[in-house]
Length: 345
Image (tube, rainbow, N blue to C red; front, side):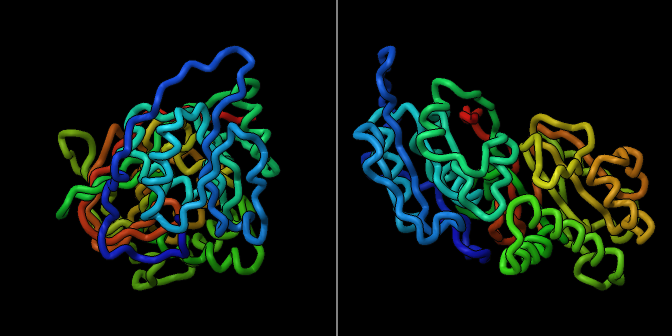
């Protein structure tokens, strides 16, 4: 399950539990209670010290895997029960781990998913417009009475060494890695959810503005970004070292915490933002850009690039972040995973 930020020595494998089967299909009769599987992470921020009601219904099956290694077996057990709804009780890191470990079990046939916002930032539930006080019973009721929103996570596949992949919704590198570490400090000071994101973003912009070219916030990371199946290199403005990018950010979410709009008018699909080693003058404009007051395309020549891509490859000299956790440097392919159906209020 999700842990504090650390760099993996290697990418986790697409492990499948022994004897795992594809989801058992069953037809639910009108008025019949749904069969619900719950992955509960007791270490998530808003779950700490809270006992989960395991007797809510005989049709609700709750798994509390102690670590990532136990997730495939837990998910396989729920799949064999033919669950009508998968509830993820945890934060963005828990969602990432469940989607990653569930690839070999559910494939392209995932049940509807509900997410209870129990983490520190809960970016996915911001996009899904899930209330912060949403309960398990609310999620079960929403299966028949609520709305559904479809999203596809970013599937990140390692191209160096054994092929393995992870799935998540927010990816970044360069100054984004430093910002994520700063976000942990914001959490320790009591800032969570959109407040923590807002504080972190504007703290990062301030560091970029005040720092020299040698400052880690402005020096960025050596990275090579190639777009689409053809592998066309992503354009560079010529600002700073053409081999480096000050910041990389990618997401498939359509609404971000704190009302941020770094991609401008781009909404659906896999969206990518790359910032070159921009000038202080352009950095001073960043608050207006990320809040939507200035259109990003107007700053392309200044080193601020946004686009939608079917997929892209990233070769990076430093670790990158996926949903709050660091992954090692190397070469990766980023694309969209299967379409998932999320239930919300």
